[in-house]
Image 1 (cartoon, helix red, strand yellow):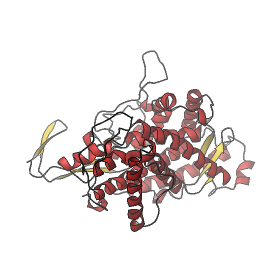
Image 2 (cartoon, one colour):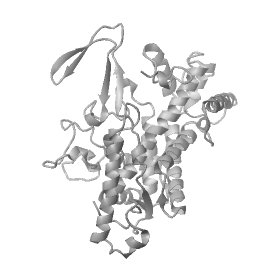
Image 3 (tube, one colour):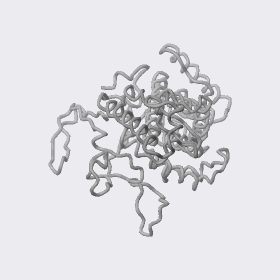
Image 4 (tube, one colour):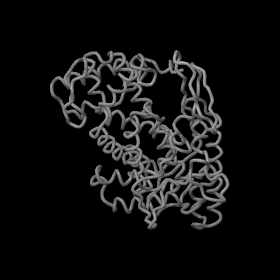
Length: 426
């Protein structure tokens, strides 16, 4: 099922049993506070740099998909791997570069280099080459046995972290911006929340320990979760019952079902994420769970406080954009940190609007009264086009990541707050 992603060797996704446990334990040691702080720093800087590039282009966001991919690849490359340049080119070039990276990190470790520069691969490299280990949080840990993974397995895991990891973040950033552009009132709600949390402080003063938890449990975190609910990075999570362990029992709608060994079972995430039995909905609203409503993640408090300290937690299995259980995504916290950092960096000072260039020129829009019927009609045409393309993208998706080919015709525009042309439309 997963052979297609065994480009270098078996990896943390394709292995099972004891071998998978070796991959998981080896990789888990690389993720910790220092790496997450790097994700925060690189997410803020990358989000701001991306915004600046749009503004230099007159606010036009002509390739949001590739922009999001490039941003997330850079954050992963710099934040998780501690590198200042990105790999590019074909498979052979990547293989050569990964070998250079691994040997460079090995030499850096041997010389007592900065652990932050070593990145998430540090503990695994120590295990592969039998080098005494230092934890990501500067706490001494026992050295793993030499050869815990082979060099090719290390390269395979690095490949999965880099490419699968950046794809998840990029997809979520892309759709977060799309949904916010389609819902200007929600975007304004997010901006008000950011005003309160960040108090218009310069981005250089934003604090990982104080501001990140507030963002994750506030509206920025709710926007991220709602985008992941509606458009998860993968349409399906494929599983298979173990061979050699006999049939497996499963309770489905209160009935016990027997699943034969070697049977493929897929979790259909868009369906699970829209199951009305597990999600808060607005009474009397048809298709509420198909609607982008980040505030559904807020848990009402008894005193009516609108400043949540945690978001709604769906029942296990009802929300699995990072998979679930022991094999859930090892980079989940890294991705969440990056995504909310990017959202905050962009939306504190600017808004993202749908471009209406396919329906009216800038000059024509300027002649239309602000907030008037003509502008609303033009915006609604652009919104209808975007929603049609979005639906087509879902329809054409397969077992892999959600295709955005059909959404490439959606155009966006970045504008300073207060200069929105379609404020409040929905």
